[in-house]
Length: 261
Image 1 (cartoon, one colour):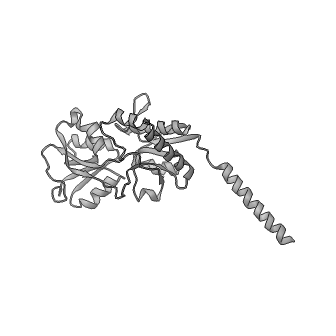
Image 2: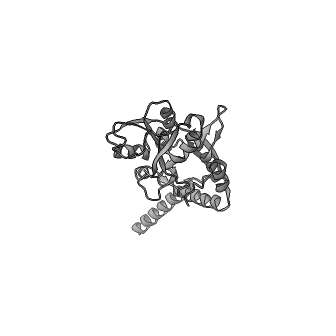
Image 3: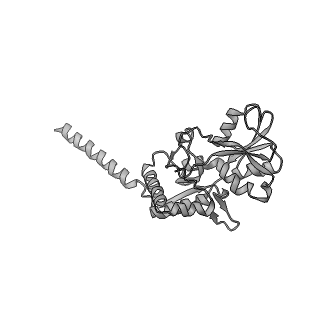
C-alpha cells in the first residue's frame, strides 16, 4: 500500500512540475529584438534615436503578424550572440548569416533573405581575386563573420584588416587603409558603390557564398530551445511573404528580390 501511495505522490509531483513549466513558458506577447543599427540600408539609427531599414521593417512586420509588442534594442555586432544568451533580448534581426558555428550557440528561423558576398576595389586595380592575385595585399572584412573566416582560410598570404562593422569595410577602403574589401554584395551596391565616395570603386570577381551552409542564407537568431518562438516567427515569415508585405518592404529598399526564392 505504501508503495502505491509513493507511486501516486511521485506521479502527482511530476504532473505539477509539468503544469508549472507550461505555466511559466513565454507567451511571446512581448519580445525584445536585438538590432545593429549601423548597417544601411538594412538597419540604421537617426540622431533622434529612431530605427529604420530593411531589417527593422521586417522585424516590425513579423511582430505585427505575431500580434506581439516588440522593443528594438541597439547592440554592437561583436556582442550580439553573447547579449542574446545573456537575455538582453529574445531574438536577433540583424542580417545574421546562418552558419554551422552559430548554430552551436543559437537556433535560427527560416532564411528571410539570401545574397552573396563580393570583393570591392578601386576600378581597374584587380582583375582576379584568387589567392595569388591578392598575395601581399590588405583585405578589409568585418570580424566575427563568415566572410572573415573565408578570408582567413583562403588568403593566407594576404594581410587582413578586420573591422567591427560592415559599414567600416567600405569606409576604410575609401580612406585608403586597405587594397580591397570583402562585404555584402547588396549593401556594397546600395550603400557605397552608388554613393559619391564609391564612384571610383567596382565589384571584382564573381559573387561568393562564404557561409559554408547549403541554403543557409540570413536568419533570425534566438536562444537554444525557444521552439515556440521559432514556430511563431517562421509562420509570420510565411504569411508576410504570401500576403505581399515582404515584397513591399523589399521594393522599398532594393530593385531585386532578395528573398532567395
